[in-house]
Length: 495
Image (cartoon, rainbow, N blue to C red; front, side, top):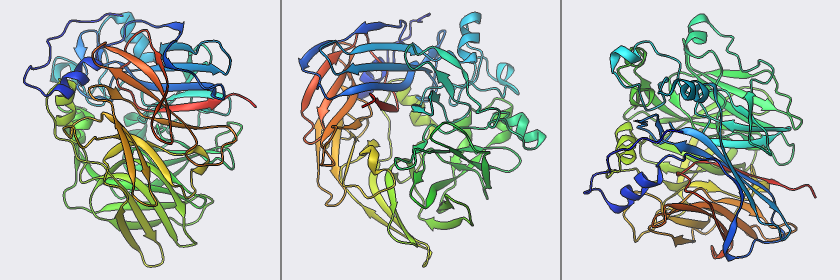
């Protein structure tokens, strides 16, 4: 793959932005190798496969992407067999049809979420086919391994080789059957990168926001064997940006951030989709509760704000629900994304773990900050999805560092607000994933898996941390660097 030379980031930018800029240099090779242990030892009880997804190259044939969400998806796979054999590592790009077409043409062909084609209006006019980057998350369910991107169809992969097997429409159920204008704007229904698997039923629940004549929230339910039910939908009063949701025993809960969308300027190519989104100032955030098993939905209002990711939620009683998420005062803007991609200083709203107590009887919402440690990309014990939990782990902002990029891993006790963190500056850790120790009885008895970018060596490592105190259990050296990614999954070996 071609790697174009680019000008270095401005020398006046803070160190962390320069590190982030370098970390996002494109990966040009695919590997299938055993990993060297450089500290500690791999736990014998850690048996299974760990998959991660994220942008592998933040450029298309010399054209740099201007948003962290745009780069071509690259899956990393780590196989742990519990023996003395080394952990086996493999990375592969998701061969989307857009990826293959650009590879054949040797140039950028598609607009992206935050990047237009070079050439201005002449090359972007009425170009409404956007690249499906397949770069946000990955899930294995019902014999399918799926690379996810919230704006379009998932891509099915071979779980061993990571070969791209094709676009997954669940037998055509993700084809848009709405009006002509809806089908023109979005021929395929979106399938969010944040599905939730109920650990008690094995069902996978998901959603997508379909834009068109009327914006709709599409709702998906896939049984444990991978059979998708016909999608349901809820008509939204206005455009909303929804990245994640919460599943409880009774509800599917969505926080609807009100936004305006400059459709004309997007259609003619004057703006990218992300530039066209603007948070509606002063408008409350709407919380939509959709019953899992049918019945009328409920809407509540909360003060304006924005949440990318939730840690979890649970039903308190028949009319009260608790939902925890990393709340920001406002939605991050497109200008900040462009600046951080160019290695320039940014201002980013601070995410604070906040509990929303939703009372359907009184129609009230109460907000309570659970912890003072800013964080993002949270993980909890997988068996506690939809249940009360005590511990959450996240990437965190260390108090001793500038509040720009996450350099720490944090652990939060949501019942007391107490927290610890471990700072890795100048290195950049990715999303931690909690893997419980088999037969453990304590909620935090397990490991955290995270990829960390080592700034000095321009290389990445897989870290295995003790989830109880964040101490190092094992470090494994990768043969190359991996650009900062997003989400991951753990598939335990059969018992």
